[in-house]
Image 1 (cartoon, rainbow, N blue to C red):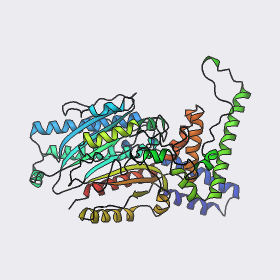
Image 2: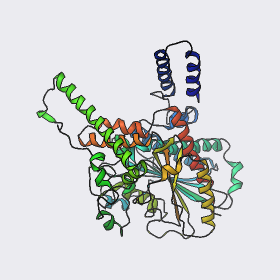
Image 3: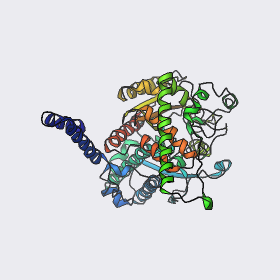
Length: 506
């Protein structure tokens, strides 16, 4: 709104006074000024000790991170501070809504078969932070509640580079609980104790950075170029999906456009790397620019011929035959991150969803946060509405769905189209089977859809050339560094989580 008013005032005051070239110059300057105003500062003072979290986290940019290591440090540290508050409340005989805090870390570089032996960190132990290691981290909160409420799973970073928003939502949520606890500790929580005499509790499982490699390196896929949101195939469907016609959705037809990976002059390394003259440097740069222009032209041409919706359906339906290609779902084996998520849900949190041993009365709502498609900053709820259990749970879910659809972006139908034949979602029926579990994928708009596709194709192309520096393409496409976007998106993410927290099972 501020930008629109600024541009309107400038335009109105200059049209009658200056030639056209001056008007364009003023508009360009105004746009540059707006970008400067709307850009976050490089550094915010956000200490992670108890005093700092209480007094210095006055700017919501403290919830955001510029790197995977920073995001993990904030997430883990807040879990540690909550555990310290809990121990202090027990010593002081104070009453908190928070009944228990547990944490667990998965080193995904290890052997996935060993994850079943992992144990939650003891309450008396603070979780350690290893900045150089890619880990999936989870915090399990057990909260007192006055009524029957649904249990919550909230996951971030399934698509790596998209994880910074989901991480910010989780960090904000943990910080708000921390501040609430601080207030209760001042009063020793006596006023609220009478409200929870029924012994009812709910669990909230926060899974941070499902794809830590992608989040660290600003890639959408993991270290094996696998899209984790296409990797969770049911055992009885793996064979049929892996062996289906690679061109089933037209992927092979679009392959030259989606995967222009061939490098006519592969980059050398080591002692064999020759010194480049100024001419060679310029020539290499121009070839890369020409390559980018060629990809852009090809993408625009294929979308114009097939139509945006058909092209989108071909792309998002994934493929399982070309490891170096975009939207690769894997070879049928679950990636280590997926195994970690399954363990966190079934064993660590005790939900036992995918094992089929879930309590008949248990109800879990799972929110998985993504960015990319849709209106700038606004969200679309991608929901599988077919709930087989025709009871009160179903009617309440319908109410929740209607409420979410009323709040989401106006172009939500265009965002959700094209996924009808897509399989392997992280919160799909395999790990989140109905009716015990209800899944919501929350998609936040960043850039126009064509720009998002271009960034994926170009980043993957240069990554396969050994040029990791082009990750800035996906970074800018999936996490705009604008205060306006951060404000709108963080509000939407917190809004969704709050709606889930208010959701009652009866």
